[in-house]
Length: 435
Ligand code: UGA
Image (cartoon, rainbow, N blue to C red; front, side, top):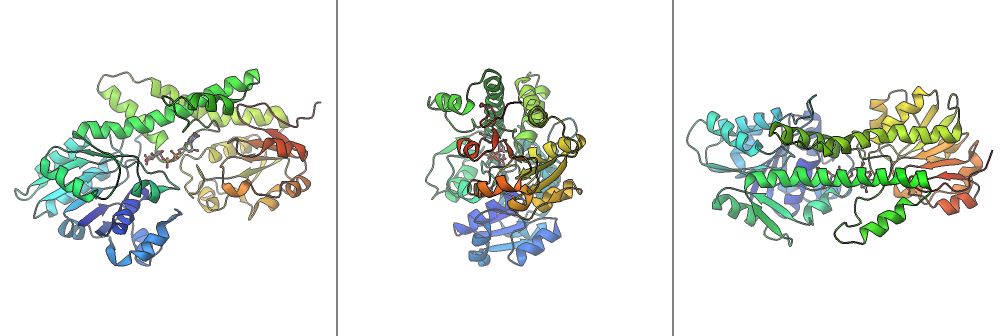
């Protein structure tokens, strides 16, 4: 099939690469000339495992352009993957979606299937349809479907190509048939719904996952207060299939471009429909407090932070991405700086992005120079390489060997036996020296 994609952010580019790898001809467009130029040169504009490889292997199936007319002219199925950022009141800013809808309306000459893939509040498909009806130049038939994307950054392509489910919200048989054809060789359950239901499935899924994380973070606080172990609690809970073990990792909170934005937008759309979903306000409040709580823990151990050097291990909002949007690391660094601490940071790929947000941030080129002279290390992102560091060497390089593990990622017992004081989240500390 000939597929059009508006927007080459994480969702758009993954959609483009994913369908190209399935043998479809893809026309992708974005206003951002720098991104399009990089893609034309065969370079993925951000770090995402596997993306570069598909781009190189499927070059002849992919066209990148800043000309949206080309996409509307060439592609029968058009995916809308533009950004839907938060407005100050928490609702989703749908102006880019509207702009694309108007554009399609003005350019389309034959039947087009318009697919909403960006995360949008319920009723957006209705507004896309209405916009196209208002702006189209002639009576060209079209359908609008909702086909939410569930990919995670860091595993975007494998999530796209091997999803747990495909959700298609459509109103006509023609639209359902085309979408069914498109996903023909994806061997997973396809759920056909009405459009509104599909839109809600996406927001409800992300909000539920965020709720799980805030829930386990509160359990972690209780475990810390009474000396219990949140990881064992999560395991004991998660073995019940009704609960499930995924997304029960306690830590410094969730970040990224999705959960923080989506819980706000879901709350707002509920409010607009006279539904009080204040549960999500609590989920957000708990998450917003995590960095301050982490700081409190550091202060309880280090006492006076002024002039102390703290090394930050990991800056991206999660491993395997260079994305620092809403990253807990940045909030924690700002709080530590306000206390007068000297901050050094190391991340395998996200350093430069973090520096754009905090220009005074001092980056270390590798973890050992980060450790040299440090009074404590704080692990914020669980990059796999941190497991295999030479921790004996790190201990010898540090001024005082103290580790705060914001993701319960390191082997606490081993570190304590090397002489570290080790402070995990929601579990008793190890190796602590008394006063
Ligand atoms: C999330 C969803 O998981 C995807 O299904 C969805 O498609 C995507 O949003 C989206 O709407 O586009 P993503 O934001 O890429 O994906 O990352 P996640 O792996 O969900 O992690 C989000 C945050 O939660 C990270 O900061 C992570 O560290 C944190 N997290 C995750 C925890 O603190 N504990 C956990 O147990 C799991």
